Length: 406
Image 1 (cartoon, rainbow, N blue to C red):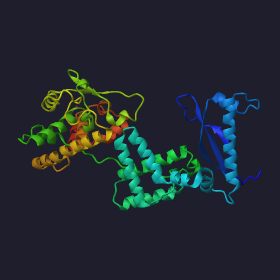
Image 2 (image 1 turned 180 degrees about the horizontal axis):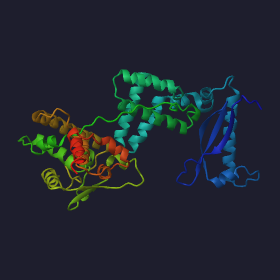
Image 3 (image 1 turned 90 degrees about the horizontal axis):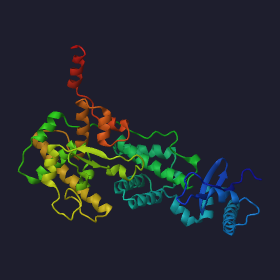
Image 4 (image 1 turned 60 degrees about the horizontal axis):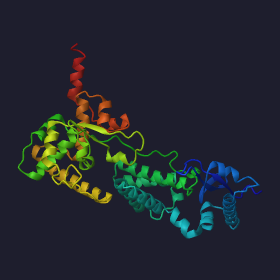
């Protein structure tokens, strides 16, 4: 046997069991220490897979499957034999068909497939984020093949993003999403695992710039008076988010009357509802007198509308819901910008700041991080700590003095 020749075999891929208790049968091609997997349309149980090697196989269905698999291996070997110099790219062109392979190996098409799967799962925000990354890569280099994504490619792309003055946090998002697409390509047999480009490459990250308001600034918002109905509405919903465990505006808009109890309401975060399947716990939010007043003032009066607040309507698609909520966030942020200027607050006080302020002020008042983690609906204390602003100098001085005044 020519040791320099590519070889083909089949195997039962037991990494992921299907709902019918079968596993996909795949081909695997080895060449000079590298390997690449290829899908087939065959799925078998472990028991049936073991039967295929029996020379006295009697099951007609399994005999048909065995012939089909044998034909696929023969086709793969014939494709190898036609190549003067084997490369996986040339093999794919022969075995899969050049047109099909080109579409599958282009990075942009892999992004498109993944974005479509996110949209079909109603994860519209994630789909838009991956679309942004796809367009960013396209701006850096067009028609990139998946096998061209190397460590050198990553370093060059990172430099390109830095030259566009993007923050380490934003660059990290692009890189993590590109890594996800690479992992999908490896899982689908489009890229050998040995070509994994992120080995030895560190994805940029940074500590979040803190966005919390001080206690004095929140007092100004609590006492703010205005005759402008839109401004009043924006402040009320900002305060409702701030008081209500810092829940984001998406979760506020998705609230329904049945979520409310006498002194609490409960929600599952929209952000984790579609991504976290295990240990999904509701967030229990206390209803203060102020939050009850805000609900009563702005609640939905249309008995046919299932939502607590009249931002959304029944029957909207996931995309329409996303657009409605984005418009409402823009409405709040626009008016809060005016309020900040009026109050002399020189920092942004958009909707996201309400969440950070809830967490940070609780921390400064001595609340345990575990409580703040539970309020925010985080699964990790590290995530919670990234939300928390540093303690103020005065706070540190007070505690230092307490060590003396025993």
